Amino acid sequence: MTAKTEGLHHVTAIAGDPQRNIDFYIRGLGLRLVKKTVNFDDPGTYHLYYGDESGTPGSLLTFFPWQGVRSGRVGSGQSTTTAFSVPQGTLGWWQEHFKGIGVASSISRASSEEERLSLRDPDGLQIDLVASSLSDPRNPWDSASVPAQYAVRGQHSSVLTVTDPGPTLETLTQDLGMRLLGESDGRYRLSTHDGEPGTVVDVVADLSAERGLVAGGTVHHIAFRVPDQATQEVWRQELAGRGYSVTAILDRQYFTSIYFREPGGTLFEIATDTPGFDIDEPLLELGRSLKLPPWLEPNREAISSAVAKIELPGENNPAVQAFFK
Ligand code: ZN
Image (cartoon, rainbow, N blue to C red; front, side, top):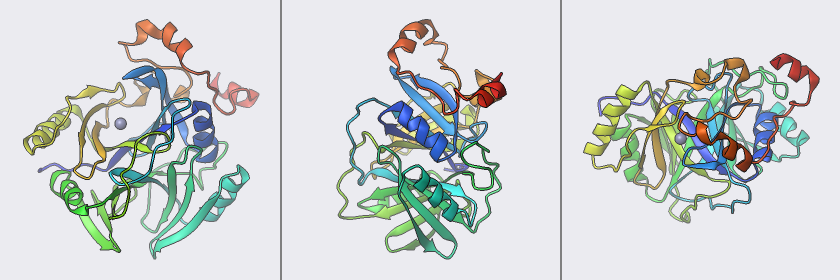
């Protein structure tokens, strides 16, 4: 592969109750809901997208919330941790903040360059906040619950747990153009660049890990960035030529996607940076109303009554209402 990915695009995970998911990611993590739409393959359920102000690729975490979904099992063949980048010196603030909303967390130091706050979301999804000595110039979403000085800058990295690291490392380096930056105790760090936040995948070799089961509280897939559909088509042909079973290009409305499974078991997606989340609503109003792709619009009434009623935090707050007038 002559091309290489620019870094992480998004992570998609499975949740239970959509309102609980919204409350946690907006109030707890301070992300912005940048799109409220439905699962295009199962339009009776939501697909919720969180990110920075405009939903920049590399800031995105998305959920399929299924009310009453059974819990999954975190294990091998999965992305087992989703890590976000926060400024250095803010983990103490974050720990207090989570304590204030009843979420336990713990701080650990992985290396001299990196400190982590680890916690679980209400469905049990493992979330880490990483304060790295490598600078992260990305602009945060300045929200009512998390002021900009502390706020998440975007994704930091994803952790893949595998029983045999060899084939997964080969896919990441040979086929996605990532670089192996180092290894310590069976944990391999790879980056599309030099380890900057948003470009990192950690592969953890765990021989004893039970096979993961994708359901509530687990990651469904992780996506890597390509600039546009023309580049994506080149990737599709290249990956197919290397023996991967790759899907056709699928229209996800805000980007287009191809999917394939890496040999360790995790579902990978290659997603475009374009067209972005302001294609069907203004930037100021992202996430406030239910958006449907043109092919589902004729079924709006049935879809609206099938999905659960959800409310954004602050939607009943007069100051917030005035802001969105
Ligand atoms: Zn995806």
